[in-house]
Image (cartoon, rainbow, N blue to C red; front, side):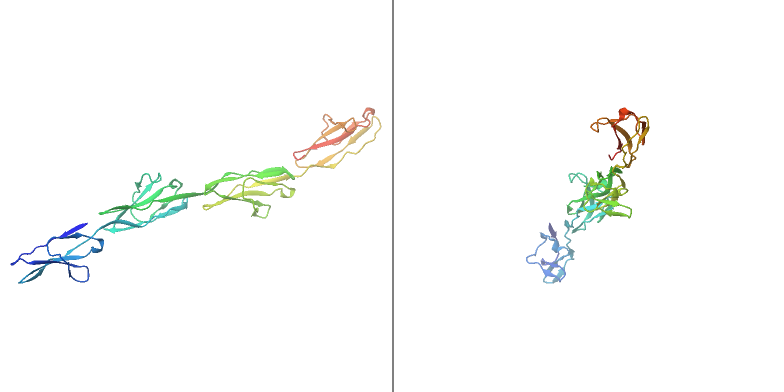
Length: 331
């Protein structure tokens, strides 16, 4: 802006005037500056320069007092705050600085609506702005406002992203299947950013990753050797790791007949028995069946659900066939 310095002196005859300046290297005349006031447009580079008027008559020379020029400047931001991504509960800081004369005051502001409106943060008048990030702060923007007598300047807005550790939302469940059957375990977790998944197995010697199993559901064909294994999902993101509950696999063996009934020859009226047993888990139920046409058709024998099947033979039963039908969840 424009600045003016004024000075005057008495004397006879009237004194001539010469304005001088001193920017630190001694006094020098200002060309053409021989009247009062001395006016010019001040620049920041002239701040601190001293000015005086030199009056001269035939009888001598006298200098005015020195006057110092101070040139103030509006704030200019030289360090901008940067976007930050942190985990829920972590410390976060935003920094900003500005030049200006006089030194500008600082006020941090926050916007919760993408920069449409801003509000002062109480007591936040220095850099850095530091606080503990919470999930409620996610997406907030922060800026510094610098103010002095010449104006104000806003820093760029900086956005805060608050991530969260994984939290299991779906737990895998124990599963019981038959040998060779398909089994699936499912699990899911929330978290930001989305958590990666790794399935693990514990067959009695500790937990180990299952190669390539990084999605849910985790499915495979169960074998008897896997019965008793425990399985879990491990979820990880940049904010932490969490394990799902353990799920135990029970693999029941296939149903097998260990004792088959044998053909019987008996006299009419004599007792006869057929025996049969089977192995399986759970313990199989038994139902005896009868065929009167050589095995083409079979029908259940009412109440015959144990071994041996015993009765007294009669002639009409000659040639009948008998068999035991064993049943459990695996066959």
